[in-house]
Length: 281
Image (tube, rainbow, N blue to C red; front, top):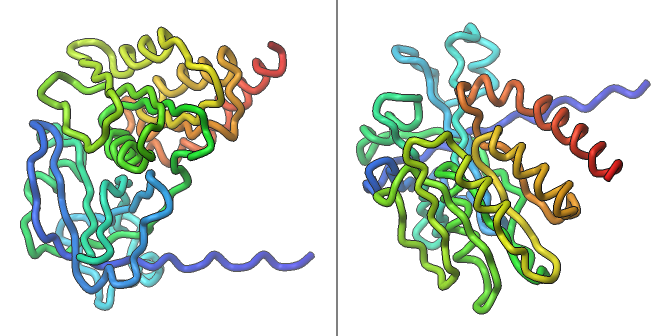
């Protein structure tokens, strides 16, 4: 039996914080730059993402930074952990990478970091990845998500050609979390208030009167909410899998480490269940 090729070493990029901005009470923007972005590119997908690397407090890594070396020489508890964030904007001429962070006080890792980080600080990350961009051949587009999906939805809207038809639903905690997006498409902002995350989003998409024609959909957010929307779109609306970009960006009660460790199995199980339901329908 032929040997499997070795895993390609993952190369970390290094950038510097150029500036930060408070967009809403719970959304913070961080703009990165520097020579480490010289060969960076994020212009094919509107859901491009990077994985930021955060080392444990008090741990210093040798230079030049080498993730494979760190994992070979340091105990696991001292390895950097990753947090995944959508590329809100990439300006190749200015070599500026914009990331938006949801911040809820001291909750989490990346949010508090974004709230306190200062210009000049060094950031390391991997990427970009990405898989979605609005299909110009679609008759209309469905974009739905919570705060975690807002950067990708905003970038997708800005990429739509003039006159494109779209139905857009974004769930946020309240009116103070709405953002100005450079698009002529009408956005339905859903204010969660004290309701469970995703409940208003599922209700809105379920109540939508679907336009005629082929839809290309982007639906992301909390995993439980996405599970319900996947069932609605794949089974009840019979949208082909290839016309759906749908996945949980996060899961209530789990940090990213726990969610990423179980995400593949969760998605496979849900997809298998719902594909079985689709075949039986």
